[in-house]
Figure (spheres, rainbow, N blue to C red):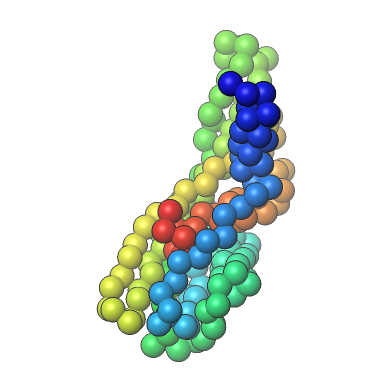
Length: 169
């Protein structure tokens, strides 16, 4: 294979994998002009009080900044987006040094969100779940790293939600 082609292929993969390049193909029917974005409630067993407002705000900002939709508070908006956080959980995902007492391990914060998109123009509702996980050093507690992890989780969730809502992915 040609070396230039291989280099181009490698660089393209790295740009996408590192989130340097993002797809912004938004697919919204021309008759859809307004959107109502309801507060995303936190129904998880463990509730981080910052997650719901920050996730809701980040999703609103992304939709307003990257679509032509006008935000409204009316229930008769063309699209009505509702959701809830259904899981906020930490689990151990990796152990090195054969799991010895001195071995290192990796924990993972996982957040699941259930979203409902009601299309009032055709009276259909689409529901789906999105999950995002971020690993962290298992020697640290969630409380020690939570503030740092939260911004990454929110960004990843918002990107995944936006793509699912508007990009037909």
